[in-house]
Amino acid sequence: MTKEHELNKMAWNEAAAFYKAGLKKSIELLKQGKVTFLGPEIKILNKYKDQLKMCVHLQCAGGTDTLSGLRLNLWV
Image (cartoon, rainbow, N blue to C red; front, side, top):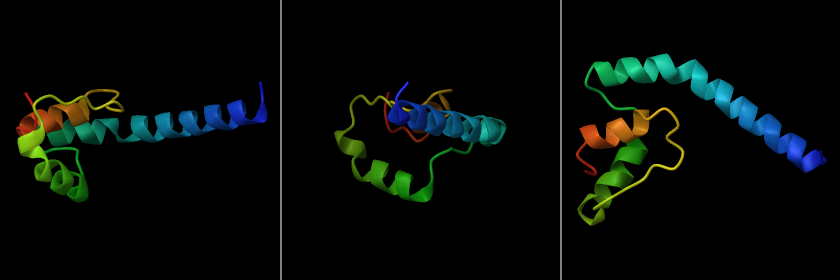
């Protein structure tokens, strides 16, 4: 494996560990009727809300951001 591949693998493993560590908190937020998006994300998404007919969150992984978008009526 090239050095670049190994570094890429390490970065993805680090990101996966970060995601896993925060997953329970994200689920609890959703159970409480809240969302997982950050303030700046909500601001940007609301700016384009009227233009969104369908949206795919390509890095959603466990579905928490997709569920947050549905909660905010950003997409159907």
